[in-house]
Image (tube, rainbow, N blue to C red; front, side, top):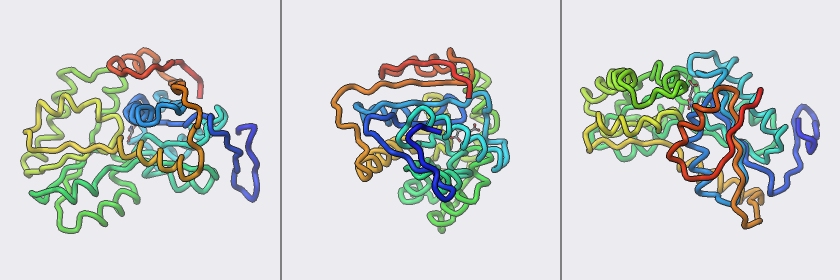
Length: 278
Ligand code: DGL
């Protein structure tokens, strides 16, 4: 628990300084897709990112396990003095955000599959959602999906094995192509015109997906929207860092730091990557 924390009636309260970092976590290296969006939109903010690769994938775990891991990561980010938490993981958000928000009295931002824009813009009235089992089976996802897709057919496909391959750095490989192709084919056969990427690891598959999908199919992911929401929450709470100095970014992994660095090889934002036990 951070030194600026008070514990009253079962809730943790925090005293916030504006130059404290934004804390971001994911089950692994995939959440760097969200970190990049946040760091680009908010260049003066300091950030700390946790890749919980040791416990990835979350998608096959129970709600209780995902919640316990999300609490572990949040506690670590608060120990590292973060002012807000961004859950850069659809699986953790859809299973654990309610518990996180009722436990910690600081803003907690989450990410969910962007089913709403897909439902609004689809012409074929058929959209595909590729996500983990944990996300697709969650109460929150089912509720959101029911709300926006009344007259629309939603083809939900579990991306079994995709996160594991990305965590091993095997992105542009035949193995990945074959697996991804097997998930996309049933959606193409159903004539979807929007594909929602419901996992923060999957934007790293966009170059491969573009080779498989006809141009008319729009790929949607929620990264930019999460960054915009993070900015709005910082402004609303008066937490924006007023110091016009380029932010410092520290990325920690409890797995292999080379995998983290490799996945960011095209990234242009300056960062430090380190291993950390959490
Ligand atoms: N990046 C996580 C997500 O957005 C991957 C979940 C997993 O580890 O299975 O859902």
